[in-house]
Image 1 (cartoon, rainbow, N blue to C red):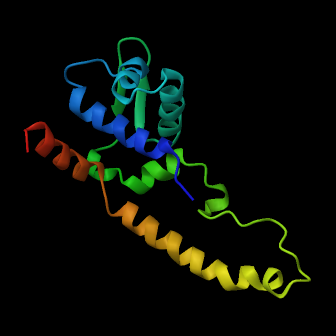
Image 2: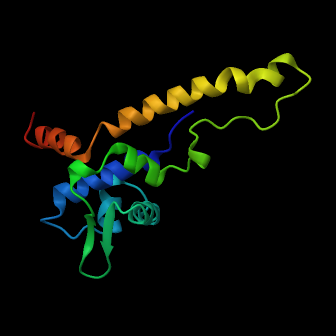
Length: 145
């Protein structure tokens, strides 16, 4: 299992918004230059972030900005905005285990609670990290530490 790069790209986008918003107009082309990703992909992610109420995107001279204070946006907010996790489930179970097999017949009973606990732990950790935390770390690296 692997979370797609959309999550880390979205976090990268927020780091750019915070770092460069006073100096540059933050456009999909600008963000594509920093991420080295096609601007079409950046626009798709920006659309997902906008739909989630995390960024504001103004056409023309406006550019992109964070829609809320950085300490009010968690990694979980970003994850939920850009990851395509169906039915709020991180783990996708194979559809038709064999009911005639004792393992196939019972695998959901055996795994479901454990997988839910794993997902809950991951989401709790994502919820504990804000973009303000990222900003503090970015400041250390930009100052030469």
